Image 1 (cartoon, rainbow over the protein chains, first blue to last red):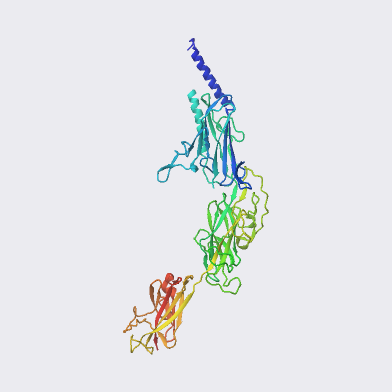
Image 2 (cartoon, rainbow over the protein chains, first blue to last red):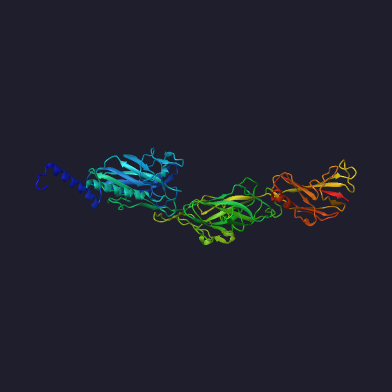
Length: 169
Length: 438
């Protein structure tokens, strides 16, 4: 609208759009706001001379059927701004089955999926059995895990979720 | 425009997630890379950002699908298998050939494997795993064969392979230990009797997949400090496996497939020593138990009819009929016997009654003229009759050589058939005919 006066409110909106656009461009151009890692460890159990059992986690170098694998998923805010609405989707690895109850839920809402599309809590996730009845899905039927992180992540703050699988026999 | 960008970003996130979710869900197998990538969505200042895929180590911070690094390691090769004897001792006969003991071999590892086989005798006094008496004899020419799948059960013309070329994980093969048995115990003097036991072992050595049964195919060391004891006499005597030299566990490597012997301890190894765990061999004991038939043959006679007294207290004089009954019994607790033929030579004072008279006062044929011999499987309740013709011209299995002092012959198997010619433990069969005094 040539020659028309532009109000202060309109200018503020334009600045806000530029600002938000800048954030998005920043994400595309190089690093995002999150440093995101996923590392696997094999669970080993040792027994000392007194018979006390101890669980350790080592690099998954020698992995055989039946071994338990711990996955640690860390996310660190490497930006100068607060990050929120963090959602982590994680497929259960091939040749592996999810270990019941192993997905930690501290500061997160954990849901599971048997088809990769629909996520529900373990108590509400169902599958259809051979008779057509709806039954609670078994942990080994899970195909994916989702964490909805309930908190915001401040700059330099790191959080972590984890879960365990067992290599199929 | 803003809304459109947001939708595109969400779309990227979903695409990344679902592509990973579609990874094939197959059974674990050695060498399979086990891999996954997590995806993180987030907002900054209320604005949805491009998703970030996970990386290993310190992680990834570059946004976008395909910018992350999968968390991956390889599943190693677990060599594991079981050897399990069949459910019962194998009934065997002294001097019998192709006597069979059955085992089941199962690959419980995570890769297809080949297997070399060896059958073994055990020392006297070895305990029978089925609770019978202890070992007192050794089998001769002990061989091993693999079920071909053509006809269930050992078939010497079909089941000819002495090794298992390949066996997929979680599948089984039936393996037979096949032997010729002696007639005496280990001392070479004492004849084998019912209940005598020979304890046998099947020793299985892990080998390369698609083995041709040769020694070079045997896997004698793993990457975890274990070794096979080897042994001679595999593949029916043609293969001697040199014991492996244990190699110190090599440095683990997530990028390579390493082999680990996971087999449990068995009974005997390839050298005849005790089979230990994680040595690439497994074994189990089974047994032969001697169980031959124990037949008794009893012949009795009674005066049936004479021309003067008829059937009232008949006497044995010329023209009189005498009934002969031959009873064949198999003792209890023995193996079944397949009866074949029986012959009885009459004295010169006797000739066969061609009509098997019934012993009534009229002494008429029992079931009609010409049927001279009655055979009954008493235990089965089956009775049949046959002719006493010369040379068995009618092919019913029975014949008489003719005249006085002739020979009565009965082919029990022909007349009765296989089922009723078989005497199981405790069963009996009778052959009955009349003779006429000359």
